[in-house]
Image 1 (cartoon, helix red, strand yellow):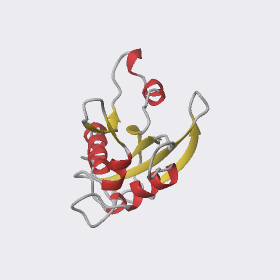
Image 2: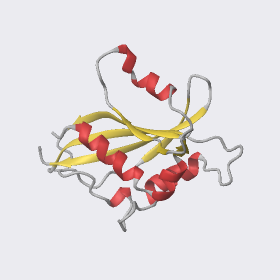
Image 3: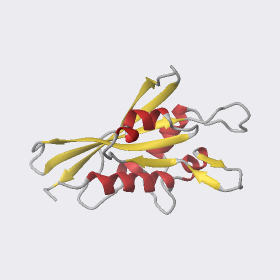
Image 4: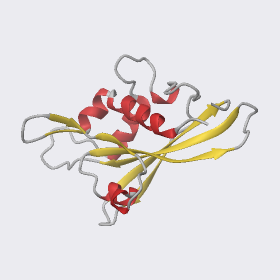
Length: 163
């Protein structure tokens, strides 16, 4: 079975390489530095590092990629594992933006726009050695603790063989 931590980072790297998605998730700080807010979450021991807290504290705009579990089983004679990752979206405030990017557009960019240097989008791209092309991705509406809309995308990657 593959270690999901480097797979999480591979997903983040591909998302950061999608030009329009990275632009929608970039802010300029007080020092005029551009910061792309597409990041990963890794489970570490301690209550100060909980997933629920990390999601709640996501600044607008930002995306957070999280490994959500691995399902075992011999699905088709080759696939021994299926790894599930969530992408939590927090869009930017549309007020004052010249071209506001909503959740629908963010999800479309995630699934359909190829990263720089590629001719295929994330759905048809081998992201990590040992992973197959992902299953059909899905997205769902959610509310945060303040009853603010957000969306959660789910990507499932079959692992071929037992790495």
